[in-house]
Image (tube, rainbow, N blue to C red; front, side):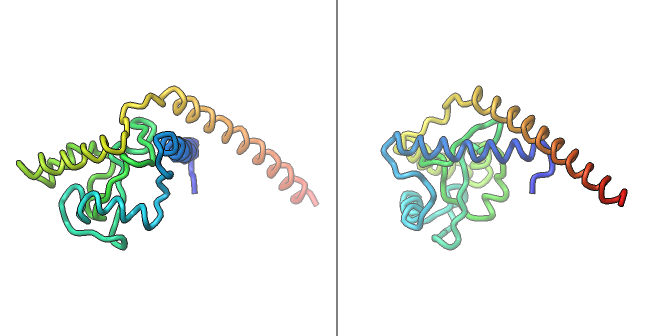
Length: 171
């Protein structure tokens, strides 16, 4: 449950990035990344059923999905093909919001880093995902607008509840 204006705005921003991701997938000729079981399998096959970061074996049940470009106010990554990669739960938890290349360096030293980075880069390129989409003007406006609208509605309902409580207590 959202606890503050920023929580509400962050939730709205994630929904926005998911919806833009669906549109972006469709415009690039892909079925939107939901992901369905077949989509999970396709993702896993591309990465040889391995965590893209540490190389541990994963399957549909143990699959955790990571956004290379995080879905947040700063990074503005989309939930779409080319930005979602397969990883194990441990790597997903450890990477959190770190840049994926920085995190990859911690799990794949030397030649392994080059090999895994190339696999990820190839996937992003193959899926025609542009990590430099400029959505900041829309996202920033949405973030601020949602927060203000939510606070206005909260104040309105608070006043209504306040009035009802006064009436109830005056009886």
